[in-house]
Length: 196
Image (cartoon, rainbow, N blue to C red; front, side, top):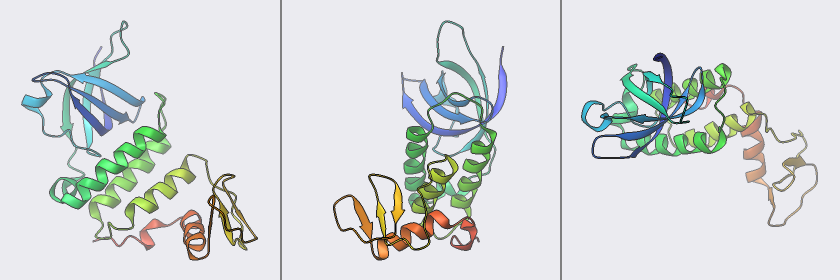
Protein backbone atom coordinates (compact mmCIF):
# COMPACT_ATOMS: atom_id res chain seq x y z
CA UNK A 1 0.00 0.00 0.00
CA UNK A 2 1.36 3.40 -0.99
CA UNK A 3 1.79 6.06 1.66
CA UNK A 4 2.50 9.79 1.34
CA UNK A 5 4.55 11.67 3.89
CA UNK A 6 7.03 14.47 4.42
CA UNK A 7 10.73 13.77 4.34
CA UNK A 8 14.11 15.46 4.28
CA UNK A 9 16.35 14.30 1.43
CA UNK A 10 19.77 13.38 2.83
CA UNK A 11 21.59 11.37 0.18
CA UNK A 12 21.21 9.84 -3.25
CA UNK A 13 23.35 7.24 -4.95
CA UNK A 14 23.13 6.30 -8.61
CA UNK A 15 21.95 2.74 -9.01
CA UNK A 16 21.39 2.38 -12.74
CA UNK A 17 21.00 4.60 -15.78
CA UNK A 18 17.65 5.86 -14.52
CA UNK A 19 17.34 4.83 -10.86
CA UNK A 20 18.78 6.07 -7.59
CA UNK A 21 18.90 4.90 -4.00
CA UNK A 22 17.68 7.77 -1.83
CA UNK A 23 18.14 8.19 1.93
CA UNK A 24 15.42 10.28 3.58
CA UNK A 25 14.65 11.30 7.15
CA UNK A 26 10.86 11.01 7.26
CA UNK A 27 8.35 12.47 9.66
CA UNK A 28 6.63 9.15 10.37
CA UNK A 29 9.31 6.49 9.87
CA UNK A 30 12.62 8.09 10.80
CA UNK A 31 15.62 7.31 8.61
CA UNK A 32 14.58 5.32 5.52
CA UNK A 33 16.27 4.23 2.32
CA UNK A 34 14.32 3.90 -0.91
CA UNK A 35 14.87 2.63 -4.43
CA UNK A 36 13.58 5.34 -6.75
CA UNK A 37 13.16 3.99 -10.27
CA UNK A 38 13.24 6.67 -12.95
CA UNK A 39 14.54 9.32 -10.54
CA UNK A 40 17.23 10.60 -12.91
CA UNK A 41 14.76 11.24 -15.71
CA UNK A 42 11.85 12.78 -13.82
CA UNK A 43 12.94 14.48 -10.62
CA UNK A 44 15.25 17.34 -9.73
CA UNK A 45 14.04 17.70 -6.12
CA UNK A 46 16.58 15.19 -4.82
CA UNK A 47 19.16 17.54 -3.33
CA UNK A 48 20.42 17.44 0.28
CA UNK A 49 18.12 18.93 2.92
CA UNK A 50 15.26 19.50 0.51
CA UNK A 51 11.96 19.02 2.31
CA UNK A 52 9.71 16.92 0.09
CA UNK A 53 6.42 15.12 -0.08
CA UNK A 54 7.22 11.51 -0.98
CA UNK A 55 5.00 8.63 -2.01
CA UNK A 56 6.34 5.16 -1.28
CA UNK A 57 5.52 1.57 -0.46
CA UNK A 58 7.32 -1.21 1.36
CA UNK A 59 7.60 -4.84 0.27
CA UNK A 60 7.85 -7.48 3.00
CA UNK A 61 10.80 -9.28 1.43
CA UNK A 62 13.19 -6.30 1.52
CA UNK A 63 14.19 -3.50 3.89
CA UNK A 64 14.59 -1.14 0.92
CA UNK A 65 11.40 0.81 0.30
CA UNK A 66 10.18 1.81 -3.14
CA UNK A 67 9.69 5.53 -3.79
CA UNK A 68 7.27 6.32 -6.60
CA UNK A 69 6.99 10.11 -6.37
CA UNK A 70 8.92 12.99 -4.84
CA UNK A 71 7.86 16.62 -4.99
CA UNK A 72 9.60 19.55 -3.36
CA UNK A 73 7.51 21.48 -0.88
CA UNK A 74 9.29 24.66 -2.04
CA UNK A 75 10.65 25.50 1.39
CA UNK A 76 14.38 25.49 0.62
CA UNK A 77 14.84 27.67 -2.46
CA UNK A 78 18.18 29.23 -1.50
CA UNK A 79 19.91 25.90 -0.76
CA UNK A 80 20.04 25.14 -4.48
CA UNK A 81 20.97 28.63 -5.66
CA UNK A 82 23.85 29.27 -3.26
CA UNK A 83 27.00 27.15 -3.80
CA UNK A 84 28.15 27.75 -0.21
CA UNK A 85 24.78 26.77 1.27
CA UNK A 86 24.69 23.69 -0.98
CA UNK A 87 28.09 22.63 0.33
CA UNK A 88 26.94 23.13 3.94
CA UNK A 89 23.76 21.15 3.14
CA UNK A 90 25.88 18.18 1.98
CA UNK A 91 27.89 18.36 5.21
CA UNK A 92 24.81 18.66 7.47
CA UNK A 93 23.05 15.80 5.64
CA UNK A 94 26.08 13.58 6.25
CA UNK A 95 26.11 14.54 9.94
CA UNK A 96 22.42 13.62 10.22
CA UNK A 97 22.97 10.25 8.51
CA UNK A 98 25.81 9.41 10.90
CA UNK A 99 24.04 10.61 14.06
CA UNK A 100 20.48 9.43 13.46
CA UNK A 101 20.40 5.80 12.43
CA UNK A 102 16.99 4.59 13.55
CA UNK A 103 13.83 3.84 11.61
CA UNK A 104 11.63 5.16 14.40
CA UNK A 105 9.20 8.06 14.28
CA UNK A 106 10.58 11.10 16.12
CA UNK A 107 8.45 14.15 15.39
CA UNK A 108 10.50 16.37 17.74
CA UNK A 109 13.70 15.56 15.88
CA UNK A 110 11.99 16.08 12.52
CA UNK A 111 10.73 19.51 13.62
CA UNK A 112 14.18 20.36 15.01
CA UNK A 113 15.81 19.46 11.68
CA UNK A 114 13.28 21.36 9.56
CA UNK A 115 13.70 24.45 11.76
CA UNK A 116 17.47 24.37 11.25
CA UNK A 117 17.08 23.72 7.50
CA UNK A 118 14.83 26.80 7.21
CA UNK A 119 17.41 28.78 9.16
CA UNK A 120 20.17 27.74 6.75
CA UNK A 121 17.97 28.62 3.79
CA UNK A 122 17.18 32.08 5.16
CA UNK A 123 20.38 33.17 6.91
CA UNK A 124 23.24 35.24 5.54
CA UNK A 125 25.58 34.11 8.37
CA UNK A 126 26.53 30.72 6.96
CA UNK A 127 30.06 30.70 8.40
CA UNK A 128 28.85 29.93 11.93
CA UNK A 129 25.90 27.74 10.93
CA UNK A 130 27.61 24.29 10.94
CA UNK A 131 29.07 24.77 14.42
CA UNK A 132 25.79 25.98 15.86
CA UNK A 133 23.82 23.20 14.19
CA UNK A 134 26.10 20.42 15.45
CA UNK A 135 26.20 21.77 19.02
CA UNK A 136 22.41 22.02 19.16
CA UNK A 137 21.95 18.58 17.53
CA UNK A 138 24.17 17.11 20.24
CA UNK A 139 22.01 18.78 22.88
CA UNK A 140 18.79 17.68 21.17
CA UNK A 141 19.97 14.05 20.99
CA UNK A 142 20.71 14.13 24.72
CA UNK A 143 24.50 14.10 24.64
CA UNK A 144 24.98 17.42 26.38
CA UNK A 145 28.29 17.59 28.21
CA UNK A 146 28.29 18.39 31.92
CA UNK A 147 28.30 22.18 32.00
CA UNK A 148 29.79 24.33 34.75
CA UNK A 149 29.73 28.11 34.92
CA UNK A 150 33.28 28.13 36.34
CA UNK A 151 34.66 25.88 33.57
CA UNK A 152 38.25 26.44 32.53
CA UNK A 153 38.74 23.28 30.46
CA UNK A 154 36.65 20.93 28.33
CA UNK A 155 37.71 17.31 28.82
CA UNK A 156 36.98 15.66 25.46
CA UNK A 157 37.51 12.09 26.74
CA UNK A 158 34.94 12.40 29.52
CA UNK A 159 32.63 14.89 27.81
CA UNK A 160 32.61 17.42 30.61
CA UNK A 161 33.63 20.94 31.46
CA UNK A 162 35.91 21.09 34.50
CA UNK A 163 36.86 23.92 36.84
CA UNK A 164 40.62 23.38 36.61
CA UNK A 165 42.97 24.04 33.73
CA UNK A 166 44.49 20.97 32.15
CA UNK A 167 46.66 21.17 29.07
CA UNK A 168 46.87 17.83 27.32
CA UNK A 169 45.83 16.44 23.94
CA UNK A 170 42.32 15.53 25.15
CA UNK A 171 41.43 18.97 26.52
CA UNK A 172 40.28 22.29 25.17
CA UNK A 173 41.01 25.32 27.29
CA UNK A 174 41.17 29.11 27.19
CA UNK A 175 39.15 30.97 24.57
CA UNK A 176 38.25 27.74 22.76
CA UNK A 177 36.75 26.33 25.96
CA UNK A 178 34.73 29.51 26.53
CA UNK A 179 33.44 29.48 22.94
CA UNK A 180 32.47 25.81 23.23
CA UNK A 181 30.71 26.44 26.55
CA UNK A 182 28.77 29.32 24.99
CA UNK A 183 27.67 27.11 22.08
CA UNK A 184 26.27 24.43 24.37
CA UNK A 185 24.52 26.96 26.61
CA UNK A 186 22.94 28.85 23.71
CA UNK A 187 19.29 28.02 23.25
CA UNK A 188 18.15 30.79 20.90
CA UNK A 189 20.21 30.40 17.77
CA UNK A 190 18.25 33.15 15.98
CA UNK A 191 20.19 35.69 18.05
CA UNK A 192 23.45 34.70 16.33
CA UNK A 193 22.15 33.74 12.89
CA UNK A 194 20.71 36.89 11.40
CA UNK A 195 17.54 36.32 9.40
CA UNK A 196 16.86 38.17 6.16
